Image (cartoon, rainbow, N blue to C red; front, side, top):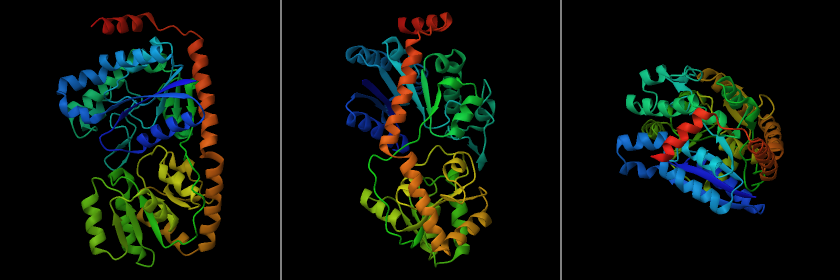
Length: 408
């Protein structure tokens, strides 16, 4: 099979970039011809505001580039990870016009929420998911604190929802969890085309030694990750179980101050791959105190692979990924008292940590290996091809609109 894997890279690398690279490599390892079609948000610095808005809504150059690529290689599948903002939904039309089936992985909630996170003012918010016009988000400047930027993002997703781009031009969507899938179904995406497939690790690192010297937080230092809740807890827990934080972001000054003044908090901005795995293997457990719904945090999968239990907020996808009392412990999001109780429970019970860690390891082997994910991905590709080959016609109004853009 010839597959084009498409991705618009962010300025700050994240989990989507990792999944893009891993899935492309996985497909190549199984003998498929893979062509990477990418753009990078570093180019935004060279663009005017009107030019960026126009490209976000419909990027004619990206359309032509992809159409040529699909025709040249006779690609059967074009698998998108991120089109925002530079590839634009125009690329769906290019892929289908070239004869390929279109697959879109839904790494975040941008189609439903201009901020992409379902998070506002310290708590989960899905006020805009079912609205034709997301006035709450625009009014509150949910994307980068900017009225103009939020309106621009909203215009792109809402215009394409209105003209049927997502319902007619995408043959299969991939949600990372059942919870995520349910949110998109509620918002009106075609239920029959919404599939669930988790992320994975290319290689099994094996279960690490049971050292358990500290609790570990790994991730973006951002308000929605709930790190402030964890820092408050560690003022109560004491130095017998340090908190090791790995990551960078908006809250870096607060974390730096805490690490400098508290004796039980250690902060490392970044680690090498080898250092990171040693940090994971040396942890008693991972904490994920998020205040938002999350997608599927890669660090949770990595913790499971290493045989480490996870303490996570009982919210959104996390309540599905981490099974309370089986692979970890769930607690009420935003509650320092609840997190402190969970930490004290596992910190003082090595046997329980061992039991949960063994279950976590089994969960990894069941759901998150490369082979399991390859089989699932092939099933989804076949479903997308079946939809494509069924010959579903583009609505006349949409076809006319497309031809109008192409003529420009």
